[in-house]
Each structure stands twice: as structure tokens, then as C-alpha cells.
Image 1 (cartoon, protein in one colour):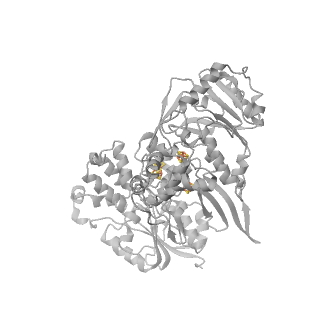
Image 2 (cartoon, protein in one colour):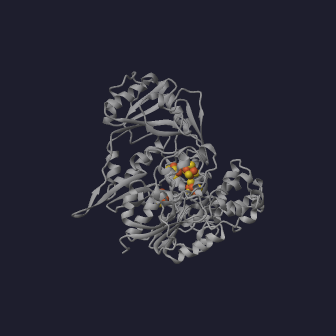
Image 3 (tube, protein in one colour):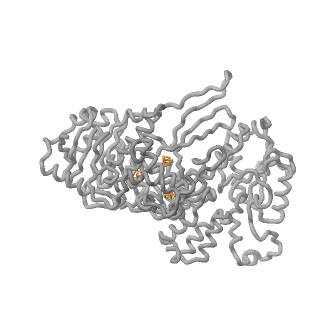
Length: 371
Length: 264
Ligand code: SF4
Ligand code: SF4
Ligand code: SF4
Ligand code: SF4
């Protein structure tokens, strides 16, 4: 890929060019002590010089000595809430003189350009696309926003303590699904193009000539630094062994700590479960059906035909790990984990799925009994 | 099919009367509600007919006095369904804090304690009479109340929800205060209903809506201790609005008797 240099003082051009092209810019900012993606109007809102310290059950922002705006890795959410909304009305019904009248909920989508997504976020996007678009019934709400999405990815120059994308093969470099990609250097940005739409934006920017060897070397070095990660998810073949270890005593060990709060699944950029609820006005004239984010840690997620299929926390934790890491492989051709580490830092009691998976893929001293 | 207009009564035992406001604070919607229900007894709304036969009796307040107990039994006999509303009626309320104390507060507070007639413990209504449904919350919300009535009007059995507050908190994309500020948030063991009000303002949940389904209070309390709370502080987190509910009461007693160091 040919990369060009964008000086730091010209980053705001990117915002104005995108905005002139009709996009609402969405990107990272500091809100409530975290890096949060939100609608942005100027580059000053970016998290300049900020970085997260992420550990199991812990997330804190700190100042760095750099003048970078992408010195962080992840926040509590990636792209998921922008496409798969936490609350999505599906249909309304109204009592009329001719009888009940049903209407599909309006599809609200507008062009957005998301800046700051990482390799793990793009891998998660690909998986969510598979789930929401590539089955027999594409989701119209997801689809409408997906079609109007412009992506400016960023290669990671560092990893957080919780990152393990190298072991899942999804980072730290952004290699697919973007329109533009950035490497952030001390003096500015290296910018590459990944699509025709990206090219169209690219051409309107004040870019330097092709970048120097030194700059390319620095970008490579940053990626190499980011690849130094402490955690490693077992490989996919090993993860399949989880399905053979259903009675491993470790399931109970983790259940003693697990709150079944669902935070891990809701911050996970690939989890897609939902439930539906209906509401009506008190006159019983109008009703609405809404789809809400749900989790396999909720009691009712495993409530089928009058029976709780996963009555205890160990069954729910087992469902999360088995689906995410093993059964996903049959369903979507790969593990559902992209190594972002969100479920580790945002678990209120700091349960580390990598550490748990490493124990659980090893054989159990007991024969499986309830298969 | 349910009757076209439900006959209801709104009763009060020992309580602050705040939950009954879920009826009065509806604004104009109250007029629509009155087309669907007929209120037979509601002292706060000026209707006094304590012994009316009704389809649904909403009971606010805890069983705190001998008179509360008698009235609860009387209500049961005159109502097809009994629904407890609010923290007091579901778990004994804030006044149930007295259940945790060995001291004789009555002596300490009142000049002539012999004039005060109260039971030793403040308890939820379901500990004494059969209760058909419970609406948890301190106070309950208008939405909660209306959703419940709508389900009955439609002839469906109201579905109890014990979903954890974290689920709602995350749907609203609030940043977790437990993870970023080490604040002792009860969200992972508390039922949703408030719309994650406290986390929205950067505060830890106090537990107004009572224990959720599958509350792993042991683990959450251990985490609080790990964040630096001393045992008495951990105990106090669980001894607030729903101190008499079983899981919170157990946690209170556990932390009264153990030292934080033993857990680490
Ligand atoms: S399982 Fe955890 S680390 Fe893997 S993608 Fe989901 S949130 Fe990220
Ligand atoms: S891991 Fe759980 S919440 Fe996530 S997609 Fe699978 S079943 Fe759904
Ligand atoms: S693993 Fe952590 S975040 Fe997930 S349900 Fe259990 S306690 Fe909650
Ligand atoms: S702030 Fe409280 S309710 Fe919200 S996710 Fe964190 S622990 Fe749960």
C-alpha cells in the first residue's frame, strides 16, 4: 500500500472534507473517565495525550508525554452500538376501525465516518456482518447503517496490558475493511487508502509526498512494539477441546467469582444476542415491539418451554466460553474472540477469559457425565 | 378474559406513601387509566372504603405493627390478587434496619416507649399472607405500574423480571463506575427498574430495586473488600434499602463477623 504523509496540523482537514462529503464524524473522546466513541465536530475533542491503563476489572486513563491522539487502544465499546443498537424498535401496532394495523419501525441511518477503529474492531465488524447480513434474513437496521459507514482505521502503536489480538490473528495492524488507514507518528500521520470512497477523500487532503523510508520504518517498529503482548489465547484447535471438558472443576471455580452480570458479553464487539419486549399505551390502542441487547448470562436467555436450561452461573459462564471460543468456529468459521481484551477490563470482578480458557482446554481429571 | 374494568384498591401499611404516587403522578394518563380501572379504595386519592371487594389490591408498606398484620390479612380476604409494591412491602423497607440491631432503639428514641406498639421486626407482606405479584423498587415507577396493569388487562400473566442493573447500564452505554472509579456499585446483584439512574450520574448503585436473579453477593462483596472497603463498610453497602431481603441480609451478617483480611 502506498502511504502519504498528513501533517498533524492538517488532521482537521480530514474532518472538514468528511463533513463536506456528508458524513457525521464519529470518533474517540474522553467521557466519564474512559475513551468513548461519539459524534465529533473538531479535532480538539480527540483524546490528545491520553492512554488507558487496562487490567482485569480495571480501566483508568492517564496522561502520556506525547502529543498523539491515538495513544490508547480500546474503550468500553467499539463499533457495535452504532450498527447493532442496544435498543431497536422493530414494529408498532395500532388499533384502528379496520382492525389491528402493523407498521415496521422506521429505519434510521445516516452517513457516518468512524475514525480510530483498530484491527480487532475490524475483525469484529467482519463477524457481525456475517451474523447480521449474510444469513437468510439480513437485518435491515444493521444493513442500512452499515451501507453508510466510512471507516478510518488506525494501526496500533502500542498494546494495552489486556490486548491479545496477535494470538487471535486480528491485530495490531488493520489489514481489511477500512476506507482509510492511519499510522500515528510523533510528527503526524501516514495515510493509506483501502477503497474508492477512501481515495475520493484522500485526494482532497493536503498530503505530503510519498513518505520517507525512515517514517515507514518507524511505523513498522511501532507495530512490532504493539505485538509484544502478555496474553495469548490458545489456538483454535485447542479451543475446540472446551467442548470435551464440560465437567471440568474449573467451571465451578469461575462461577464462584462470576456475577453473571453480562458485562463481558455486552462490551464484546462480536456478541450479538438480543431479546424482544413489548410495550403498549394504557388505552391499549398502540403497541411497540423493541429489540434489546441480551446476554447468555441472563436467566431468561436460557428459559425455554417453561424450563431454565442454564440454571446456574457455571452453566452460563460455560455457554459464553463454549459459544464464543468453540461453537462459533462451526457457526462462522472462526473463533468469536478477536483479542480486544474488553471483557477482561470491564468485568467488575476481573475474570480473565484467556486465563480461564488456558485452564479449561486442558483435560479434566473426571470423565464427562452430563453430555 | 379479564373484566372490562378492573376493580382495584391501593392500601398503605408502614411506609412513606411514595409508591402510591405512581398512580397520582401519571398526569393526564391517569384519566386513561381510570377508563380501565375503577379505584375502590385509595386514601391518598380521597377514596376510603377499606373493605371493598376488588380484583387487585396494591399494598404499599411493610408489616411493622400488629395492626399492619391484621390489615394485611383483611386485604387478602377481600382481594382476588394481592400485589406488593415498593421496598417496604417486598422486603420490609428501610425500617427493616431495626431487624439488624440488638440495641433497644425504642427506649433510646421515645420518651414513653410503652405508647408505641410495633412488632420486633419489619417484614415484607409475603412473609405473612399469600402475595400474587411483587413490584420491587424504592419507589416503584409509573412505567413499572402501568406495564403491570396493561399485562393484566390484556389477559397475560405479568412476567417478573429479575434482570441485573448492569444490563440496563450497558444498554445505555454508561461507563462502569466500579471499573473506572472503584466505586462499590451494587448493580451486578440488583434488579433493573430505575434506568441505571446512579451510574448515569457517575455514582455507585445503592440497590433501590432489591436483589436480582442469581445474585452472587459473596463475590461482589469480596471485590468491594479488594477495592479497599473495610468489613463494616462492606456490610453497610448491603444494609440500606433492602437489608431484610435474604441475599443482602446474609451478606450483612457475613461481613459483620469476618475480617476483610480473611477474604483476600
Ligand atoms: S471475548 Fe473478550 S477479548 Fe474476545 S472479542 Fe469479546 S470482549 Fe474482546
Ligand atoms: S457468547 Fe452468549 S451473548 Fe455472546 S453471542 Fe454467544 S450466546 Fe450470545
Ligand atoms: S465474567 Fe465478569 S463480566 Fe462476565 S458475567 Fe461474569 S462477572 Fe460479569
Ligand atoms: S456501573 Fe454498576 S450497574 Fe453499571 S455496569 Fe458497572 S457495576 Fe454494573
